[in-house]
Length: 172
Ligand code: AMP
Ligand code: MG
Image (cartoon, rainbow, N blue to C red):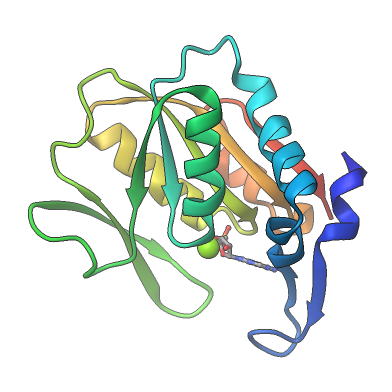
C-alpha cells in the first residue's frame, strides 16, 4: 500500500508548531491514485454486509462518499457542531486542548443497521471514537472503521480498542 505514500504531502508545523500535517489533496487530485485508494479502502469489507458508510466531516466525506458508492450502499455524514438542522444527536469528545462535538441527524440510522466508519486520518482516535459512539447510541451496529492514514505513535488504535476491525492503508 506504500504506492499511495507518494501522493500524500507532508506539511511540517501545520496547523500548529510540532504537527506534521498529512495532506491528502494530491491523492484526491490523482484520478488513478484516488480510484486505487477507494478500491483499497473497500477491499477488507467486501463480505462484511456493510449497509451504510458514515464519514467524518470534512475529509471523511470525500473518502466515505466514494467508498459508499464503491460498496453500493448509502452514506451518512457525521458533522461538526451546528451544521445539521434539528433533530440531531450529539457526542462530545476531548481534544488536546478543550473539547469538540460530532453530530448525526436523529433517526437517520435504522436499529441494527450495519455501519462502516471512514475518515482520512486516525491520530489520537478521539474523532473516530466519538463517531463510533454516535452509531452505537443510535442502536445501529458498528461494523468497523477504515482510514487512509494511521499515525501509530498517537495511539488511536489503542483507544479504538475492541470496537471492531480497524483498517488503515498507510501507517506513519
Ligand atoms: P484524532 O481525533 O486525534 O484521531 O484526529 C483525527 C482527525 O483530525 C481526523 O479527522 C483528521 O482529519 C485530523 N487530523 C489529525 N491529525 C492530523 C494530521 N497530522 N494530518 C491531517 N489531519 C489530521
Ligand atoms: Mg478530520
